[in-house]
Length: 359
Ligand code: SAM
Ligand code: SF4
Image (cartoon, rainbow, N blue to C red; front, side, top):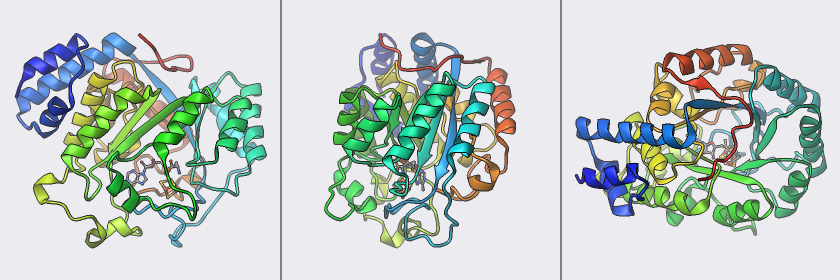
């Protein structure tokens, strides 16, 4: 292992793809301790000690898609579907402001029951009544919708590319009839429209190789992203991928694991490749290590957490994967819990919208 490559990164010489791949496969604890240290130091120097809170409102679990990994897929008849009303969403946004969050993230399935103008009204009302930044995450909506919502005041849009391995992506994320899915093209459109785009990947998808995750991390540096979310893939029994016989066959030693150690490596390497990015310590990570997964993510490169504002009666039904962390908490409990966790590791809760910093 060439720790020289890592040390150079600490002075901002980018890691190349070969070094990323070597570090992903590293399992020597003392070398990993060095990776965590340099990632944490890079985070501190570039985005500081503040942890920004982005309040998540999961406002609809309807979805037209057939993603092989996600419990919200249209064919899953085991979940009760819901769409929150404008007033319910505004209540959550007001709570976000009261709690001192700088941003609300409005997330849903790809739900065309959410009409373009209704969504524009939601965005305009939040922007009119609060000082919050508004992030949208509604899947692959047409460019015209993205344009209308940007004009209504939306600041950011989150769309993970999930994996840059095209063959794997096409297998696990089927196209809608007549519309080829191209999330990289949508990310470019978002930038052109003036959004701060966010993206990311799942780690440990069955059939995903170590090499393809090195490609993903390498791809982050070219995308100029506000936020880069990396979380473990968590199997959902009511999905095709929940049955491993459905997965793409690769050699066992090529399969990247979905365990927490691998996710920390991806978080740390993402920080080194994109020192200025906002990187969340994700709920999926907190789900696979409920004790201190969030804290370890924050200590290995991350600088964002996304407290959940979704009312408890809906939270249970936004079941992307089973046993999701914090599903029985109220918004107030999430706030107190996360603030405590942030302060316990010597960090401070950020103020303001916490948007993209540029060197
Ligand atoms: N529908 C929108 C979309 O797909 O972009 C936004 C909501 S979707 C539930 C948000 C993210 O959840 C996806 O980008 C994906 O990375 C993540 N996700 C879905 N199923 C997952 C699973 N089984 N394990 C981990 N993450 C998952
Ligand atoms: Fe729908 Fe998004 Fe889940 Fe795919 S990942 S099924 S688009 S909610």
